[in-house]
Image (tube, rainbow, N blue to C red; front, top):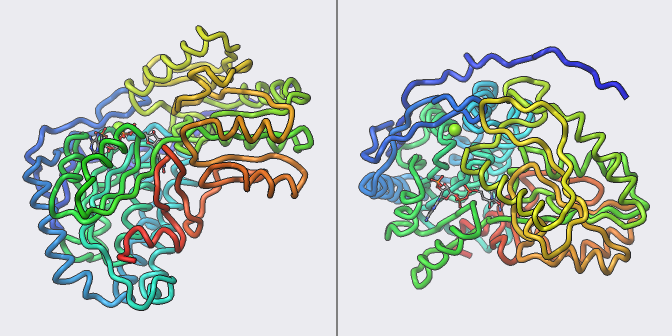
Length: 477
Ligand code: NAP
Ligand code: MG
């Protein structure tokens, strides 16, 4: 079948208002950090976007003290209805500056503009709107009358959804009356620092939100600071375990959102064309840099050949390239380091005997790109079936009975999400009860809503973000 050719449709980067320097946001002001400056690059071109001044251990101390002052003097005393006004203002400012934020996110992270524009930024605004609604209703959240905040929250986020992960962290913390010290990821600090400007625009009292760019050591400084009451971390399971060890024996509360290796289970009776769209969305959305990505496809044996043929055709139509082009489906891998990790795992798939198919799409010479890849003949013992690749690589396994599908789906140390594709409602309910995963999607994948709690089992972490349940992580219940 012929594939339509598309003319280039690049979004202008001017609207990102890129500045040569960005600085930490402490106590309501931008200030030079005394850490080693870092350069944030555009992973699609390898060009330096901006120099970012970073925080040092003493800046962490200053920020935590500012957050404590803001907590004691202003924020925890403020009626919920007043806190809600700030959250609503922030939500509206994110909407007003949505195009600027979307272009900046795509530049700094490498994700396609259609995703930052249609998913990341609107969902970030939605989290503030949703939590603004809770701020004056906490008495009715099911945690008894007048539930109390925890104090100062230290929050550490990864690079895959920079502004959205910030929203998942900051919105519930502020709604419940906590103040915040947040560290964005080293490779994607820019939208967090524009968010700091939004806090100023919204007139948020100084110290309620502090943003400290820096590397992992600054994350550790935040975790270990005695003035922190609660840690919320999203990132890798290894760092999550380190953090859990370092808060053991302290009164700090902890929630961890970690890795995943989700099963996307397709039964023979599923509408296959629809399932193909869900599989593509499940693993190729955001270049597969998604903790809940459907990275293990479990296909019923009788339809695996037909499904693979449809899937390969569909994947071969995905357009890879300039993240700012509105027609781009697959953007850049976020860093050279991540690209190396993906390549290493893909090589292990080859050497362990899986069958590799790679989309024939052209790959730009500069920048960090990886063509969408599907491995078939994958066995459960292979690394590509067990380890999180965090890239556009799908591992396909098969099953014959629903019991076998459940056993294979649950054969993972993780447990963040799962997908089920079948016409039978009773089977969906049965499967959903058997699968050990925080989120189970049926005949869809990667659907998010601020009202729905998100979180994991086992090595995918603990605690929930979003929904009424997500408030619990920031309240003394
Ligand atoms: P990562 O290396 O764990 O980094 C996450 C954050 O922690 C970054 O800000 C990082 O700083 C910081 N950090 C590194 N070492 C630290 C330490 N010793 N103490 C405190 N903070 C430290 O993870 P990543 O590779 O950036 O992110 C990918 C991982 O996140 C994947 O495993 C993915 O599944 C997971 N993830 C989970 C969810 C979820 O909701 N469950 C959502 C998104 C991503 P630097 O930026 O300087 O490294
Ligand atoms: Mg960057």
